[in-house]
Structures are given as C-alpha cells and as structure tokens.
Amino acid sequence: MSQYTALITGASSGIGSEYARIHASKGDNLVLVGRNEVQLTEMKSELERTYKVKVTTIVQDLSEPGAAKLVYDEVKHNGIEIEYLINNAGLGGRGIFYERSMEEDRVMMETNMNALTELTRLFLPEFVRRNHGRILNMSSTAALMPGPMHAVYFATKAYVSYLSFALVKELEHTNVTVTAVLPGPVNTRFAERADMTNSVLFQHSASPEKVARIGYEAMIKGKRQVYAGVPLWMRLSFIFMPFTPMKTILNLTYKMQLDK
Image (cartoon, rainbow, N blue to C red; front, side, top):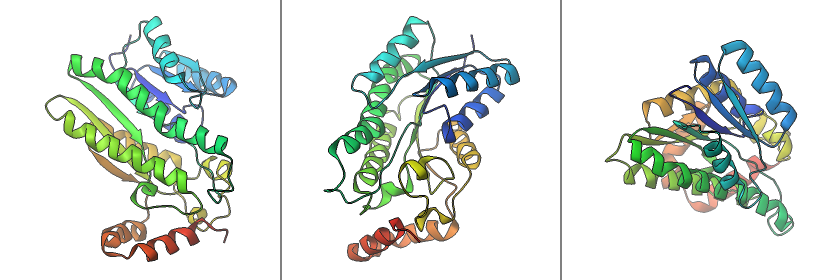
C-alpha cells in the first residue's frame, strides 16, 4: 500500500480529476469520492491502467447529512491510511438570495462547508497522532469579498479560508499542514452548474490542470494559501481591496456576476 494515499472529494471531473492524475503520476494510491459512479469508475480505470496505482472509489453525495462519516467509515473498513486529504468538492448557484430555493442553498452549504469540516475533523486527529499529513481545502478568490447574486457561495468560501487559516495556527507545533487554494474563474462544469457560463467573470478562465498543479504543489510545500490561475489584474485588485469602499466592492462584484 502506498505511503502517500490521497483522498480526493469531487474527484470524478474538473479540478478534482486533475488532482487525481497529478497524485497518481507520483506512483501513489488514491481514494476517489464523488456522486457519479460511472465517471468514478472510468477515472479508476484510467489511473490504474496509466500509472499502475491502486484506486478505491466511494460513491457518496456529500450534500447529504452524515455523508462525510460514511466516507470515513468506508476508508477505515478498507484499512486505508490517508496521508493527503484534498477537500475539493464544491458547488455554486447564482441568483437573488430571497428568490433561490432554500434547498439549493442547503445543498451548497452542506457540500462546501459541512462535509469539508467533518472530513477534516475525522481525519485530522490521525494526522496529528502520526505527526505528518497534508490537508488541501479548495477555497476561492470569492472568499475575499461579499458576492451579491452569489451570496451563499461567496460566504461558504470565506468560511473555508478562515477555517483553514485557524487550523494552520493550531497545528504549527506539528508537521501537519493545511493549505487553502484560492482559484479565480476556472474552465470546468462549475460555471454551467452555477448558471454563470455567460457571466462577465467567466469570460477569462483558467484551465483545471493549471489550478490543480499550483494547488497540489502548494500543499506539498505546506503553504498556508495560494492563488491558482488568477489573472494579474485580479491579484492587483486584491491589494487595494482593504482600502476600497464596501459600496464600490459590492457594485463591482455584482456586475461581474451578470451576463456579458
């Protein structure tokens, strides 16, 4: 069994599948978690055939309460020791907050925050006990500001970033690291599912391969935070954000969510 087995959520497509390919290319084993059994099976076949690694798949919808514990229990049942926990699963949804259904936002909050928190809480004691392990939490540049028209999504990503940063401090006496990855717009099915394909924000998006490569390398180095696939103009805007009036930030963010 590989010494560096990685568990990746949202692993059947997009950035998650790229994380899986990068990790498998190192010759290390994987546990892939996702909702789509067909895509997971295809990914398993591809990775095992190409890289001669062992891939375990767990079909689980992380928006369901208790799903994280089911994933953890299956990992323990199979006797797998996880070294890298990559909390990649996430989803968005555009619309006026009071017009969106509560169920849509519940699913988003369960996936983006609760499942990530529970998986981290379940695996982290083992990492600390062994005094080694890496955690990668997929946040977003959306974490840096409020997001009218995407209010709940932006708020969930702020939660992910601040949870990650707090854990960095709590774990500084150990060899366990937590990395928050903040991508900008990425060319995946996320935009389609979030109804943002034609938005101004997604007119210049990065490739999932680039984002995953930057995020994975930052995790290996134990960095606290990394921007991944973020255009220079956007990075520069973050420097001045603390000095920008909130009204201006809200107006700009709102316009970026609208169709071009």
